[in-house]
Image (cartoon, rainbow over all chains, first blue to last red; front, side, top):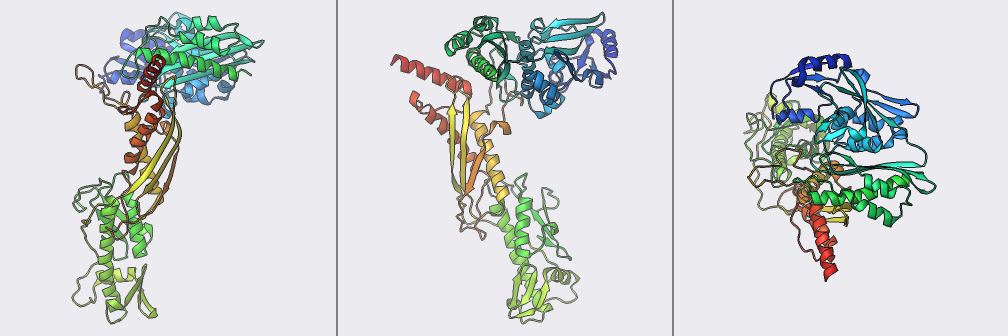
Length: 287
Length: 305
């Protein structure tokens, strides 16, 4: 439970962080809230020799209303997301998912950027950004690039952010009229991580289901969009039978996680139930 | 128990409370009998270079046993204080002295009185002493009850089990306990609340798991689930009060009431909810997946029956 020795540098700006990452190469690791990285270091599953702390960079902590979009700085804490009026009004799914993370202490320190780059298969924020079709702004030595949420999660604990890059911003579209969203989660009782978490967004068009997004976390090695469920429900009236049928195979073909807290079979079954309930809740909020 | 020359009280106890609140309940006993203010009482425990040897707090005994020892010390101190009062007030003897909190008065002579604090000063300055008495005002008492106390109660859990996921939804949790005479209702409630949480933890979440190689896989709080406030229902608590006869205050233990009542209450509630599937017993902890499997197996059984 004691990490190996490491050096610590507090970067004062994104440029300085990039410069430090460039100088130390694979030995360096970015430190955000530290709630995923530090436990890994204590178990010596991660052994960086230099930690580059982003905690002092004020320019990475913000929530901005930018016309049709909300922009969130990578170092914004869960607490800020859950309590921000702008987020609660314009991107409520982000607030609901952030409020479901861990406990108060974790939400006070943990950050959206740290969580997303860590790419935990049971991350609450991952489900939210997938369902919101968020755009990730990543800065590296060769400048700025944009990664859509759909291609951000590469694999178990692996995101599209390279070791020499920084996730600086997450951009989501504001919620529209006649649309609703919901995040439902069955937590692992010890850690609070999702055994199953389902984030959904439903837009109604003429009483029928228009645009719909369903994102599932905790079930597979990486959080995923349930495209088949979305396809079957788009244009439907979301009646009980259609909904139940469409959601039943939300995890069809997924190689589901299995551990001491929940079997693959149970995760898949709960995912189907939670997907249905999450869509029902989102629809009921679409007013 | 030591009384200072100014009448302040130090209680040194070997019961070693670690959060149960005997600092408060022992202070209340002293204030009730000696007529001093809570600010004038210090309860010291845990420092073995200072306190009496004790075997600790367990078996819900700290107040019923240790608190009674405090009570007995006060008996001894008041006995000696009466002798000083009789001497100071020129009464015929200590049997002439009536105690009303901190006021010591000659019976039948309302204006002839002194205070516990004045007595304490006289006991330490020792200019004159009652016949055969030593200076100072302190007492040590070991208490061995003649029998156990028998607190009792009834806990009722009302739950729903989610038929699709096996999750347990709380409806009500009611706990009625009888711990005899109550010294501090808030402390008693706190003991009951904490006990219920612990008992529910055992019933629903806490489990030590080893893998097939004998490796402990629930070695940290990331994997071993202890009950958290947000997991728990609102507790509806109330009391009946049946004093015990085995100690002078009529007090009984309450520390374990919640742990003893809550575990079977919740398990029996869930077993009752699943009775339509022929369920008569479920091993703890009642994890949702376990209940989900029982429900699935039960439904399959009913479908083929």
